Amino acid sequence: MAERLTIAICLDHATVNGGQAKVAFDSAIGLKRAGHRPIVFAAAGPVDPLLRDNGIETVCLGQTDLLGASSRLKGAAQGVWNFEAARALRELLASLPRGSSVVHVHGWAKALSPSIAPAIRASGLPAIFTLHDYFLFCPTGGFYDYRAHELCLRRPLGASCLATNCDAVSMPRKIWRSARLALANDIVGLRGLFSDFICISGVQGEIVAPYLPAGARVHLISNPIATRDLGRKAEPASGDMIFVGRISPEKGPLLFAEAARIAGLTPIFVGDGPAASELREKYPEAQV
Image (cartoon, rainbow, N blue to C red; front, side, top):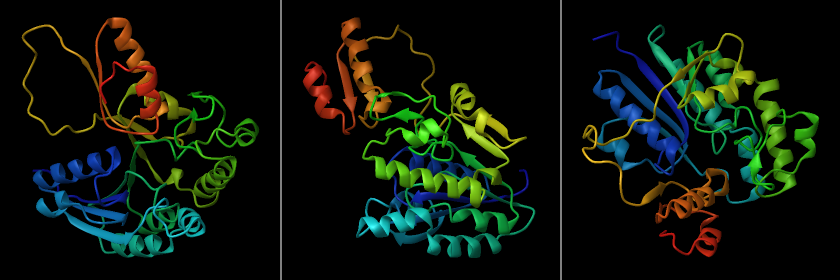
């Protein structure tokens, strides 16, 4: 086997509440089975049984994420600078063996905050970032105008960006998110800490290319899927169309339903989200 590595896997939640945590945890399990030492570092609890059952070392601060904070002010403060996360991550990284340890960040915007940057920099360890969203580049995290329901081509934090209310909630939140992004990259240099970025597609790599640090390497790695490979299907594809994921406007569920209608198929949605009511109203044939 190659050299045994220690990988500090940093993300917002210690529980599988979406794709970010699911991919991070499956990766941790795979790394351990390959003989390495993954350590999950997360702000928000509780710790998922998946981690315990697979013997994954976990450092969980037991905090809430920003939405779960006891007040908006407390959530806003944590989102700008999570002092406890900064301290705990610095201590963890300082304890790891030099020369055989890596920091792998999966997310920071929902609980950890830009405060992880000084801790990573002080450690001197190589760092890599997996792009589950675009919060490292875009204030709203999606290069998407949630008001106009269209892709956003504005330069992040440029004059046009700052003047546009594209946030799904409100303009004040857009202003707060913009200030946080400026803090993350222009003041504490979070984005510049990563020498390598993992994308799940070439399109994603093209989207972020103009904003990556000079010399950064991009790796195309598909998300792990915990299922047995049955090989090629003997018969042509048949049956209904199935959408698996959060039913929110930026993920295109209405477009999916329209495509199914044109094709004469029944769209089946496995999930829920803010666009579910509109979906049911406009496409009564959909099964949610």
